[in-house]
Length: 450
Image 1 (cartoon, rainbow, N blue to C red):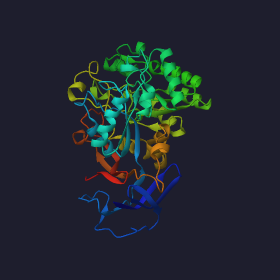
Image 2: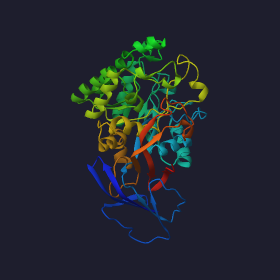
Image 3: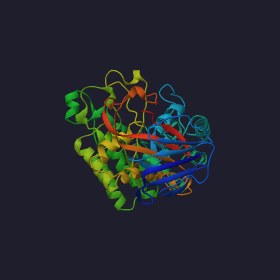
Image 4: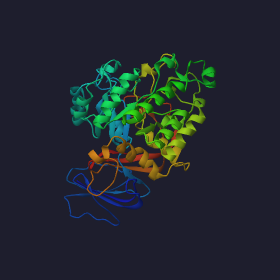
């Protein structure tokens, strides 16, 4: 199939490209980037479409997309997704999670290993890989566990997990509390050249908390989670990364102190990357209206000072990328009080709009910086750029592309999500920035028909 994208604002952070031009895709790859392109040879049927059009397109067609007014970015990369498969497929499965990713503009998503059973052996990585090959329209990569069963007692077969295709290891959902065992994991990761993705949470400090420990916890009459719960493990893992030379990737950073520690560690040459989630830069604890399960996430929504530090860290490069921590749950698990419901919200289908609305439209990030945070930087963090060609638009590269209309206003409606999860505090929000097309390896995997 040939796809000619015309008049789009091509944004490629790796090359510094930011200009209105055309882009030609043939046989799954980008073959030309230039002005006033034409199809190099006639095909059986040519279809000309503008952004928002729909129709049945055969594999023998040549398609022309008029992307005027739209951004043409490298396909987005999410380093932090919960697909719940195997074991919790009533919440999400590989097919529905990947479809949600495609709708959100993602061409690569990385699944966390806290499934049932835990992804701690190569055959479990292969289960995800084979199922994704059958069901997923986009690339799905399976992160491996740090310890067997995520019990924090004995290291998993990390080498076997990496050989099976895991790009990183993580104990996400918890921290490896045994510092000696964590050190051993960092040493193995350093030897294998993979990141350790750290969910930084000292379980001894959680103490039943469900929201941030501030005046709003008192207002809501709910137990609080202190910033130190995250900061203590952040500090420890930065020390372990410095000592071992391992690459530490800090998940869902949420506190001002964590941002400051990362900034210092980077200045000292520590190999650390970090991510922030859209909910943490879009909301604070002040925005929780009442005891509402849709606002319960881990780490919790913090104070405005923490949020401002996250945004500043993303702007100056201390925080490298935006990741969703997409965490779908069944409706009955997000019902009742925050004291008893599950932690987590979905994010794959709202991340682009929240980033445009909260960061790009106010002038905090440029469109090129958004592309870097949502595609190029995460691809680099997991070495996907070198291995799979993710994160850049270049001649000869696989055509993983997202087309976004930054000016389109729309209302978030959780009932229309592809994800099985409907757990979001953003339902009903008026936002700007809509994914119009997602192209993975030259195939159209999502087309907005709104």
